[in-house]
Length: 129
Length: 274
Length: 212
Image (cartoon, rainbow over all chains, first blue to last red; front, top):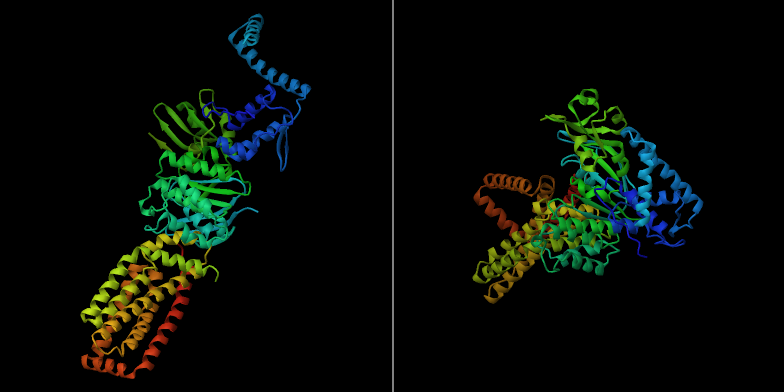
């Protein structure tokens, strides 16, 4: 399946969030197709040497966010990507992240024009990579 | 049905009282039992196995044929060879799987003809593990299995535990004072200190209920009674605080999610001033 | 007691460390018998057999094995019954071997082997009585203290009997015991067996109430 999950002990991000984030990214990138079965909760716990509750939580969150469906006795299947839902969620997340940036900029005394400049530069460099 | 439930367990020895303790070990998960040496962990395990008779309380546990136990030292006759260990114990277990035992001896790198007294600590642990995993046990009880072990042997034990847990009917009770063993693999953690239960909850909840705080001296007086295991030094202080209590702290303090080790140490520690 | 058979095998396996000592004692017993010390050959081996049997109760090695018994699917009473059977068995086996050597030695030297069987059975009975009171003491107090207490009690009783009766009376008593023959021997064995039966019940009671 080519689904890799690589964890960091020192990143400060809780393990379950790292797992969730990487699986989500894999789904969004298309590394796993809709209808595919994800690794079992216990199998993943064994492979990553983490607790079963940790992987269970990651999968529950993914299900709550609409990325997978957990079928008892069978496993977790990747759901078709609901473009509308994904967009809405992304916008919510972006708003939060931008809010932080705006606040930091205001404290540092930057003008709205300078802030927009930063944003444009970032978007450009992201498109180039 | 949980493989082990202790209710109201009390045991008094000379100058030491254990309990009353309620402990439920939920099926399908790893329960870590942590605490300093002498806190009561081994007594609890012996009580669970019926080796120690409590003064009060009840023990509900699955049959011994469904339990595998690993101690810090093998409880076998020193002159037995590894193969004889299997032969002596197999008749007790209807579900004994000889090929699995032989396979586990091979995995452990134990020469079947080697005597128990000739085995290194790590090999001794792995021999016990081989026995514990060869009779269809659903509950694995590990009592300080990693003390004195080299990192490789410790890692091999944790590998086996992880493999054992892929079966959802399997449960592990892992008692240790080496908290780092449990940092990632424990689902639930029970903290014991001086015979009392300080906490018993999921490992995530435990690390969310508490915060490790490093602060400046000026901050201390306001929160002193709320700090567990306070350590004061010339440059400031550090200690464990309940998460809701940390809102009172100023910007200069560092507030972090604690490791299991920090929780156990600071809940048990007396305040000190260096 | 479906757990008795595995427990018996376990107990026999536990004695493996003492194999060598037993073998040496067997050889010594044979040597004594053929060198003419028939009277020594059997008691020597008998005592060794009994000591091996007693090593199942309350020694440091057994206390370590208690951790093993604690996790095995076996009841405490089965552990005790098995220990008793093996202890009595070892003692009897040692006496039988000793008797065989003594018997063969006697025949080889043209001496009478009569009375040998009687003495052998009498020794079995007597040692069973000894086991009956030593074992519960070892179970309760551990092998060191227990055997010390047992030894002290034996010495006190022997002292009382010896001094109380006097040398000649004692010799006379032994002679008449000899003369009383098969009935006395049978009686001794019966007392030994009853003693063991009572003893095992007492030991089970102690063992079931102990913390391990």
